[in-house]
Length: 116
Length: 112
Image 1 (cartoon, one colour):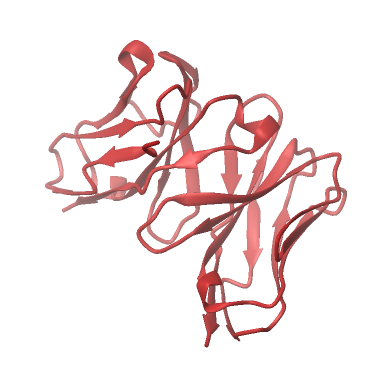
Image 2 (tube, rainbow over the protein chains, first blue to last red):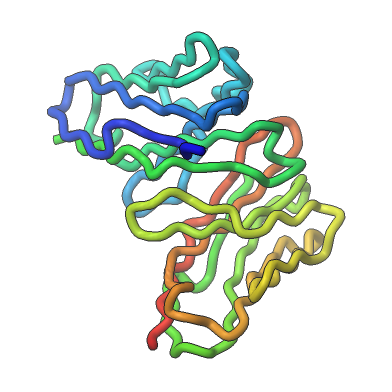
């Protein structure tokens, strides 16, 4: 069974440009999460999808970030326009059931974003 | 606002040593606490999940304890091995959402 896959693994863009990160969760996992780690800081929650619906988007930093999960399969996270402080590693995770009961949460390897 | 602190930030030990990693959180009203491991350039792997009603969980050489009232958790690793070298992250979940609040992690190096 394939794990959570993220693309690209590393993206380098200029300030003001647009970047789209993609996450393919494990097949059959209804829950999909985005987290990010900015240099020197802890990993922070961005948002949680249940199928195609946004269950919790309280961690989205501002309206330059747009996450979608059309059809309840893969998800994209678009940053437009990118700013220097957006640099970091963006992690995607998925789970079949709600995580809190089982602890089963599978993370991808992350997409490293560098904004110059 | 929940804050999670992990001490120490880095730890280097010789192979075979027993060790303890510490995690503290400011708001004791948590739903559960989870320990993760992250290898360089990789994603996070869940190690242990402790529900708020539990005191500890064990998996192999790993034992995690939880003292909710004092806002503390420890991860005990017995007979450490070079393969245990990784960053260990503690995260708490509070009621109302699936959101995890992470600490910055402890980078462990086990020297052969």
